[in-house]
Image 1 (cartoon, rainbow, N blue to C red):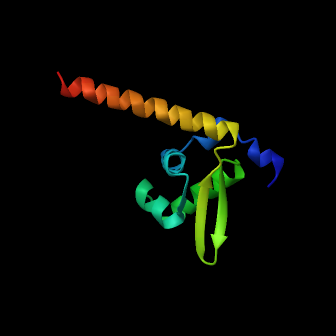
Image 2: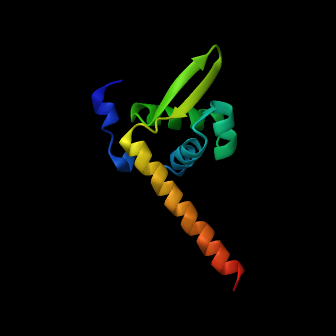
Length: 105
């Protein structure tokens, strides 16, 4: 991987709802195969693959191959990935808190 690829600006990494969905799913699950990521993100296989390739170039995701099976892993050891995981957590806690407040009104 080229060093300049890892230095992609945050705007490019987070410029797509699909890419954000994939990041959120992998941050929560750790690693999944491409079919499961596509299913959970509600994206087709080729769109999912394109997003995963961008995330690999950015250094946020890594790929492992077991024959024809492709597993993608969230690179939590990367400080940017760790920060994104924390951001997703905060947003989820806020959403739950808001839903709780709305349901008790």
